[in-house]
Amino acid sequence: MRPLLASLLLAFLLGACASSPSPVKPPLALTPLSEAVPVEERWQLQVGEGVAELYLRLRPVIRGEQGFAIDHRGYLVAFDTRNGEQRWERSLDAEVAGALNLSEGLLLLGTSSGRVLALDPADGKLKWEAQVSSEVLALPVSDRGIVVARTVDGRLFALSTTDGAQRWVYDRSVPVLTLRGTSTPVIKDGIVVVGLDSGKLAALTLEEGTVLWETTVAVPSGRSELDRIVDIDADPVVVGELVYVATYQGRVACVDLASGRLLWVRDMSVHSGIAVDPYRVFVSDAEGRVWALDRYNGAVLWKQESLLRRALTGPTLVSGHLVVGDFNGFVHWLRRDSGQMVARARVGEGDAASRAGEERVEGGGKEALTPYSRERNILVAPVAAGEDLFVYDRRGILSVFRLAQK
Image 1 (spheres, rainbow, N blue to C red):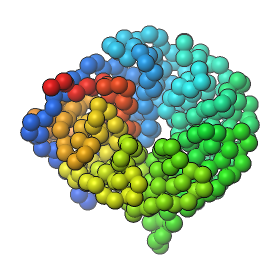
Image 2: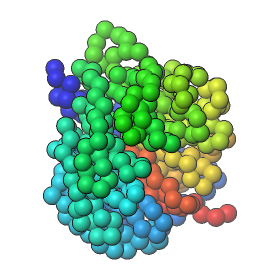
Image 3: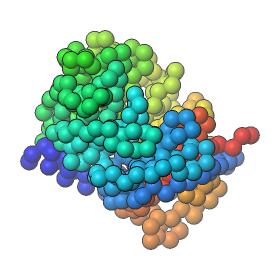
């Protein structure tokens, strides 16, 4: 099977994961929180059709008092982050696949047809576009006048921020079967760090694309192609001279940026994301456990298991807490030091800590947690800006939450 077709077929599996990560056991039902911190839903905004039935990790981009969001059909809106009031809108001729990014004065995004678009953030008008080799699921990133875009066929393209002209291409083969998704490259001090579908992490020079090192984080094992999937779909996080990375059916690891040497590893299956604070690495694994690991040795500090099989997003740090979203539109706040659940809200409905027992899914009654619900999926980690948390669900509803002050 061709790698690209295999990747697209496996979208069915991850689409199911977004609704039910287990074909046997249903998601764990939520229970009301005692002594919960109240959550304020400050405002909400409907952004076109959202991602509809597609598995796309579209998320808003926030810069000060201005934010931008887009749906899968290319409906782009700029809004005031303080109140959600629309500043302008534009309909692009694009089937959007990759999330928005705002960098070096450009709004960047990728499409399912392999185009990288650079827009003017003042009005959304196209400044340039570049054709690359295949679909661009990860958001493009830029620094020092160079845009770096990752494609699903294993290539990394460097483009000029001026006109989109190609600077260099890095190419690595894709396994026969891969997850539906690619991790976003990270640029640090002229070095591009990228996670690959083979379970390898690579570092290249930004200017020329010269490979500095490639390190195997996880080795494929098992008899079937499904068993051998070790994609790095969670975006690597670079802190100082350390890189934190996670693979599906593999490991969470800390890697030395200068040499690519593995400093510590812990066996774990992760595809949704990583967050790092001064002391801890936070991950939500493929089964819905939330973990806190010691940044410097990988030791387990705590584990939260009350959200099992709820298809959690990657974690986000905000207001001294750790936050994850789930398959049924709920957002959960945890204490960083202990993992204790302290608050809960639902996209479009506000505070939900005391009424979780009334949880419903599309077409279901009370406690009807069918494993196949898709309508309310939160597919991507919430975006933090100051004390506000921006959460975008499958339907295109953008909700902004803030913990109430005690």
